[in-house]
Image (cartoon, rainbow, N blue to C red; front, top):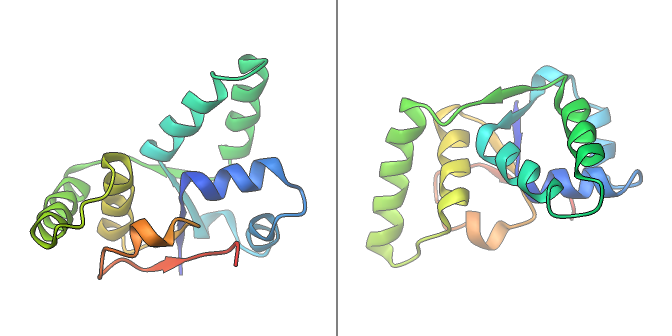
Length: 133
C-alpha cells in the first residue's frame, strides 16, 4: 500500500522528532510514500513566511529528496471533476487545494494520510488514514 501525505502530516513530521508520523515513515520504504505538487507548494509557501526562509526551504528540499512527487495531471483533473461534482451536488464542497490533493490520491490509488479527516472524509471513495490518532 502506498501513501500520499497531506500538508498537515508533513508539518507534524517536520516539527517533531517524536511524532507518530515520523515513526510510521521510518517503518516504510521511500517508494511507499509519495508527495504531490500541491502539498509541496503549500509547504514551500509556508517556509517563506517565517524566519530564515532559505534554511527552511533547504530543509524541505532535503526531506523530500527520497520521495517521488506526483503532479496534478490529466488523470487527477478527471478525478477532481468527479469529486467536485459529487461534493457540490451534496452541498459539501471542500477547499480547492484539498480537492486537488484528494484527486491526486484517488487518481493514483493512494491512501491519503491526514489529520483533516473532517474535510477529506466528505469524499466517499477516498482512502484516508490519520497517523496522529
